[in-house]
Amino acid sequence: MLVTLSGLPGSGTSTVARLVAAELGLDHLDGGTVFRTVAAEQGVSLAVYAAMAEHDERIDRALDDRLTDRARVGGVVLESRLSGWLATRAEISALRVWIACDEVERARRVGGRDGHDVDAALLHNQERETSERARYLQYYNIDLTDLSIYEQVLNSTAISAEDLVKAIVRAAKSVA
Image 1 (spheres, rainbow, N blue to C red):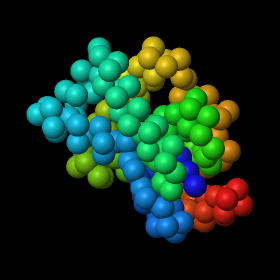
Image 2: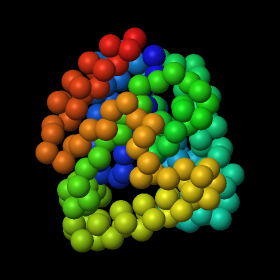
Image 3: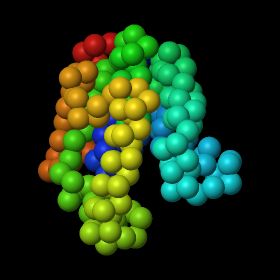
């Protein structure tokens, strides 16, 4: 079984992915963690590595190839901005889920997690999303606002992580 979970920063994908993986007895692989790990291995900060990725598509492609290879094995909740698209393009059967959330709520969550005020987190999120959206359009011709590939589009703004998990697990069990 493969479940892909995607969403913008602060939407709750990490929390929900961990819980879904535990509930379904699957591994959990987070693309953001892989990206951070590779940045650390390269001896640069996440911000510097992301800036490097804006000019070197090999960085994103290597990460996405690693995630796609793991998706082919199955038995995983794959969490990344592009995981649903990666599965779709590789023709891998999956339950593809997008978690949406109001941008101010996302900024509140990110700010709380990273120790920034909401305004700083909002600006950081917007800059990051602009960079990623441009890269994904340029490198893959993928528009992150196109949600047509997802079987589930859920909104975490006012719905608890537990309720999101229940909906995803129910859907995953129905397609298994």
